[in-house]
Image (cartoon, rainbow, N blue to C red):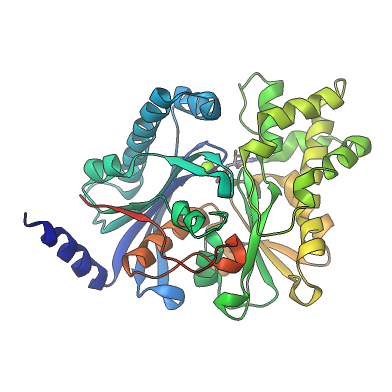
Length: 382
Ligand SMILES: Nc1ncnc2c1ncn2[C@@H]1O[C@H](COP(=O)(O)OP(=O)(O)O)[C@@H](O)[C@H]1O
Ligand SMILES: [Mg+2]
């Protein structure tokens, strides 16, 4: 093929409407790959996005274990992990989309193995391998360009939240993945704010995994946490975490709230019952959200309505703590705005890919701290 033909095909694709775009990611929980297939008409803030299919596929156990050890691994192992994660993405997209399904483009966030804003961020899941496996154009590595422009490289979903949930002052979207990210919607894109509030499920999951030797990954339904009571002295120590005082733009990850943090927590309360530790972690998670709204969101912008998304919506203890801590704001789910709360992040990466194809910037400088708005994502052509 004449080399420019590849680019001409891409330009042709960019003009095709509607596009069938998949978004795929594995979040900080490293539980597996979430895939959303969406039909998109147009691009930019006015794009119309319709969810066609959504599904999640768990990682093989050994792969997940390696991913959680990633910060301690050497280059050869990271290189291999990147290929294994890519293969898991290929399988997940194939399985969720189904045989014979047309697919024009994939936006892949990959799997974060290290994230520290200006000190670097690393996502694995080699996009060239995914493009080769699926034979579709893949846009990936969305964080790097924002970091290059001086930003945190995160969070990236506030732009997509604006596309999905509209120009609504007084509305916020809170994603409860491993980390919790808050988007404050606004009347224009420039008005949107967002940052990571702290852990979402990460401390809860970490406590349960430590107590069960990794046999259980999460407290199903939050049932154990609901039976516990909050350990006030431990909560007070948790609330002194320096991340809570840091002003946005800010983002966090496993580096701050992962295994070492959970070990420190257990050392401070060696005789505490698991139920009580979980109840305390749920309340801490909710308190991080409430405190950061009070500290960092001007009074006129505080949300009256918080729509939840992410796996944490299934944790009743977390929901209960959020309702109490965020009162009088009403706590609901993105389902009320027409989107499956589990699909929201994967849909966001489909939107980012669609806009990358259109050449539009998708980082929000007021959110990530970047010097300017830039188009995000790298292209891997099939
Ligand atoms: N039935 C459930 N009960 C309680 N928590 C759940 C349930 N299902 C999922 N979760 C929580 O959701 C997390 C996964 O959420 P997800 O949105 O995929 O996060 P991430 O984006 O970090 O991968 C799990 O690690 C777990 O903590
Ligand atoms: Mg996940």
